[in-house]
Structure formats: C-alpha cells, structure tokens
Image (cartoon, rainbow, N blue to C red; front, side, top):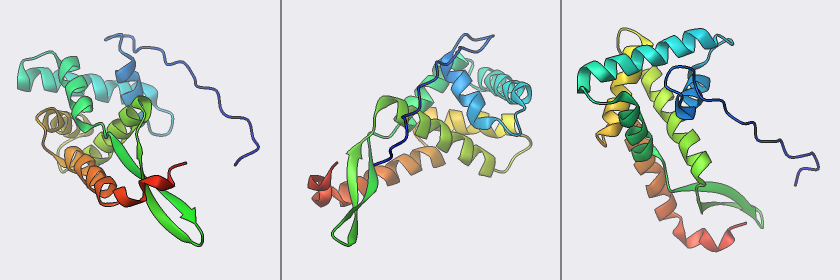
Length: 156
C-alpha cells in the first residue's frame, strides 16, 4: 500500500457552450500537447456532425453512447501466493464513465476517415446504436470477468 497521500478529486467545470461536464471530460481525453481550444473545436464539430446525421439532440446521443459503453465489471490482477489471478471487480460509476470515454476516443483515433471530428462522430453514433469497437471492448471486458468468476473470492 502506498504511503503517499491520496490525490484530491478535482471538481470539473462544465464546458462553456453545452454546459455539460461530460463534454469537458471528453475534451480532456482528446487533448494533445495542452491544446484545449483545438480539442473543444473537434468536439463541437463532432456534435454538429451527429446533429446532421441523426437529427436528434447530440448531447442525448453522446450520453446514450457512454451509457452503452460503460462496463459494469472488470478484471484486476491480484497476486496470491506466487501466482497472479485475474479477479473480477465491480466498476464504480466515475471509473466506468472514464473507461467508456477512453475507449471511445481510442477507437475513434484508430478509425479510417477524414478528420478526428468525423471519426469521433461515427464512433459515438455506433456506440449509441450498441455496435462498434467501443461496445465490442465492453463485451470483451465482461466476458473476461465472467470467465474469471471463480476467483471472485480473492477480492480486496
């Protein structure tokens, strides 16, 4: 166990246009080299593309995509008596949201397409429709936890 102090949770400010903390969290995931303005432009362009393609509220579609992509359980490596077990544990809400956003941005970057806004918009739309790489990753995480259910008694 670490002897250091635990880090304080920073309060997130909502983004200026949509007044949503979720968009701010997504901005931080896309951020590169401290260029927050560029990251925000990408996200706002993404939301415009989602609006055009689906003709629905883009914020609701983003929330639905994150809800669909959030894992309920994950596995954590735990060393017991010289061997390492993959122990399934429940995911807290904040970590689940973070994982969903991280996966979404990662798979958006890996997509082929014109620009990041276009790729991210497609990934978000796919996730809101329960398809795409982000959802596949969540299913894979759930399968891993299910397969290692026998080691659940090694929980912390």
